[in-house]
Amino acid sequence: MKPADFGDTAEVTDRYDNSIRTRRWAHGKLVDEGFPLSAVSEHLADPEALVWVDLWNPEHTALLELAEEWNLDPHAVEDSLAHGERTKATRYATHTFLTVYATHLFPDSEDENQAHESRLRTTRISAFVLPRGVVTVRRGTPFDIDEAVRRWDENTDLLQYGPGALIHGLLDTVVDGQFETIQELDDAAEDLEDCLFEDGASTRQIQRRVYRLRKELVQLRRVVLPMREVVNAVLRTRAESNHHPELDSSYNDLYDHVMRAAEWTDSLREMVNTVFETNLSLQDARLNIVMKKLTGWAAIIAVPTAVTGWYGMNVPYPGVGEAWGLMSGVGIMVVSAIVLYVLFKRRDWL
Image 1 (tube, helix red, strand yellow):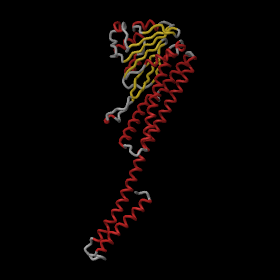
Image 2: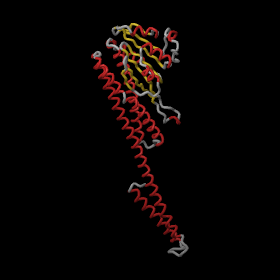
Image 3: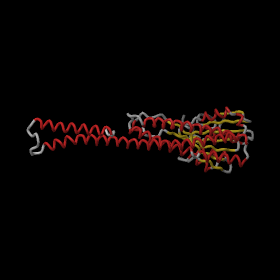
Image 4: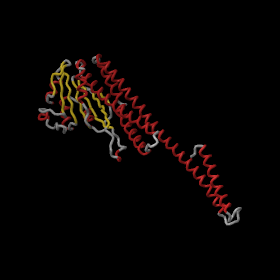
C-alpha cells in the first residue's frame, strides 16, 4: 500500500491503514488500537497509558508537524528521515532516539549478469523512546513489524514496565532477523567450500559467489556490529534512571544475542576470506599441474623433432638410403619418447 500522506493531520488522523499503526496498553493490557494520530498526544499524557505509534515511509513535512506536537527533537526527526544514517542511540532532553536496521536476503537471481549483485536488503527502523510510549519510523523495504507485535502480545506481563518492554521486543525481533541472515550466509559459505574441491566446478562461478558473499558480509557488519553500542546505551540509560530492574535479565539476554551475532559475523568474514585465499591457492596449484603436463609433453615431442632434424641434414649418415637406417631412426624416437613418458609419469608430471 502507498504510504499515507500526513500533510493534513486533521484529515489523515481520522483514518487508519497499514502505513500507520497505533496501540495503547494500560497496566500491561491492550485497551485500544487503530486510534487516530490526533489522539496520540492525549494518550501520551495519561500516566497509566503505554502508547505505540508506527509510521512507514512518512512524508518529511508531515513527520515534522507530528514531531512538534509530540515534543520530539528536530535533530532526531531529521536523522530518522536522512539517507544512510548509521546504527546508533542518542539521548535527548525529552526522549531517547534509536536507529537500527533489520536485514533479510533476497533469493538468488536467475539473471547471469546479476549473479554477483548483493542479495542483502535492509529496513531502517528509527525509534523515539518517550516516557510513556514509543514512536517507530520505518523506511526502506518492508519489515515484518507484526513479529514484534506478536512478541509484545506473548509477554504482556512485561508491558506493565513501560516503553522498555516495547523497545526490548523490537530490538529482539531485529537481532533475531539478523541471526537468520547470518545463518543463511553461513550456509552459503559452506556450500562454497564444498564447490572448491569439485572437479567440475566453474572457477568463474566460484569467483562471483565469493565476491557476492564478501560484499554482503561487509554490508551486514555495518549494521550488526554497532548494535552493541545501541544496547549498551539503552542499558546505561536504564541504569541511570533506575527503570524497572525486572527487565534487566531480558536486556542482558538481548545483549548476549547481539554479541553472538557480532562474533559470528566476524568469524564468517574470516571463513569467507579463507575460502577466497584457498580458491587462489587451488588455481595456482591447477596452473602448476597444467604447466608440468605441458612441459612433459613438450619434452616428449622435442625428441622426435631432434631425431628427424638430425636425419634431415644434407650429409651422409649411417644407414642413409637404406631401410634399416629409417627403422633405426624411428626406433630411437619411439624408445626416447617412451623413456621420457615413464620418467615424467613417475614424477606425476603427466
